[in-house]
Image (cartoon, rainbow, N blue to C red; front, side):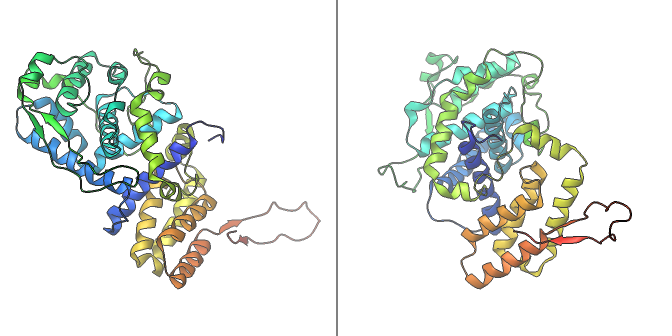
Length: 371
C-alpha cells in the first residue's frame, strides 16, 4: 500500500486489533485495561443480547442474521474485514457486512461515550444492494440502536415499546469520566413479525476479507466516498486512535497494510511465494519454542495473516514476529531464544544464476540469514 494513503494508519490499527483478539483468544490471557480490551468485552455482551433476542423467536429475520455469523468471533471479524475493505476502496453491499460494521461502530461509540456522533445511518442503509434488505436494516436499527435517530421505523410504534436497558461496563477509559455503558434494545415482536425469511437469503461467510460484501456490477445509491466520510467510519478511526500504539505493534508497525488486490492475488494464486512463507510457518511450529503460550499466540496470528495475504514474504514474517515478540515476551532469555528461532526459520535459500559457460564452476545453494 502507498505510504501516502490517508487511511494507512487506520488500516494498520484495525489489523492490529484483529491480531490482538487472535492472540488473546489463543492464550486466554488478559492485557491491561485498555480501549480495545473493553471493546472485546462489550462485543461479547452485545452478542449475548442479540442471542437473547434471537432465542425469543419473535424476530425470525434477526434469528437468520444471528445464525449467519455462527459466533461472536465471526461477527466481529466480518465487521473488521468490512471496515478494512472500505478503507482500501471496496464498497460493501450485503446486509450482514453492513449490519456487523455498524454494530461495531456503535459499540465503539459507546466505549468512547460519543453517542451524538452516530449518524449517517441512511448512507449505510442505501449501500445495501437488496431493497428488501434495506428495509430490514431500517427495522433492525430501530430495535438494536435505540439511541440512533430513526431512519424509517414508525416513531409512534417505537414510543409504545419498552426499552430493555442492558448492563454497564466497569471499565473506565483513560480519557473519559466515570459513566456506565449500556446497550438498549427495543423489544422486537411488533417491529419484526411481518418480515419474511426471503429477506434474509444470506450467503455463507468466507474467511477471506476479499469476499466480505464487496461491490458487484449493480449500483447502489451510496458511493464509496459517502461511506468513507461517514460517522460510522470516523467513529472507528477515532476509537482506533484512542487505543494507542499497541495496535500498531500488533500490525508489525504497518507490515500488514496491504491493499485488497495484493491480498487477493496472494491468497488465490498457487504462488511459490505463498509456499515459501507457509514453509517458514511450518518450521516455526516444529520448533520447541512454539510450545510457550506467547509463541503459540504469535503463531496463531501469523498463520491467519498469511492465509489472509497480510504477510507475504519470509522477511515480512520475520519483521512481524520480532515486532510483536518484543512486546509480549518479557524475559530476556526467552526473547533471545524466540529471536533465534524466528531468524533461523525465516532464513531464505536462494540459488544464484548459473555462470556463463567456461567462467568458473557452479555453486550450490546459498543460505541468506535473516537481517
